[in-house]
Length: 348
Image (cartoon, rainbow, N blue to C red; front, top):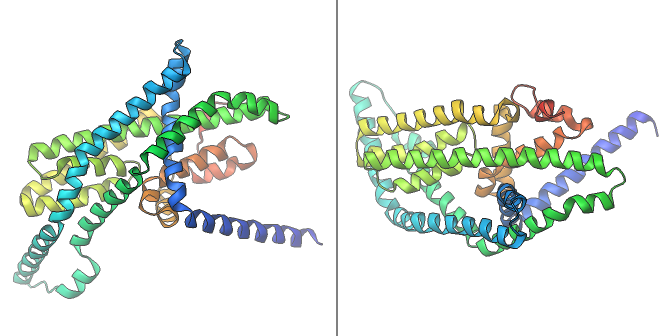
């Protein structure tokens, strides 16, 4: 077989295998999503877990402390947010109707200035009520995933115990163990650094938004703070999406001027967190291009559902970091990056 035909056949087989894998992942999303969450939680927990072990605390006690902290934090969030989600879902039809009335008032105001707007066509293609419905649906889906919390925490426990013995297993299994361990360590450190910093910045974003909305007196402020926390994992796009339902509710409840101020609050918080604090902590070398962020949002949302949209950037970052640590695939990581720089440039 000629060399060109051999390469074409190899490319076709690779694409076919990729399509089969994607179809399998999409089919198994109900099983994979909890395990992916467990994987990311375990990477975040690995730092404190190993730190406690280094300070002479036995592994079972260290694991109990870390997992106990995560469970207590999760219970606090569920207790705080669960009631708000149910109340908001029940009141959603009322809010949607009020928002519809506000839209008609806006149309009439535009008519006074000679601007003719087709109400039926505009509402068919842009219905603000559906945006609030989507926010409630996303939180309900996230709550549904949390019903598997016992399985997620159990998986985290086993992953952390397994991580402690992984270097010895790699040394026994691979011929070039030192090189493999170096690549594995770079991968884990890069993913852990990204997830830890992103999680801390997201928590700070959610808290500041919640406090600001409480000062304005907006209903369900902790709920909108939770949405801001979750969508902060999606750079650029996430902050805009998180602000929309809260601003729409502010228009209904507080009026147009407070709604503009709340929109300004979101803008200032995300500019400070996303453009000043996060880049300073994380460095520019972990960035993804805006196009890659958008494509990953659509792709992982299609494959894994609403939770996949929240995990889209962390999942893509894992892929990018994995490409960085291998010399033969580093060029792909450069294409995915925002400015052509990669993590391993500063570590090699």
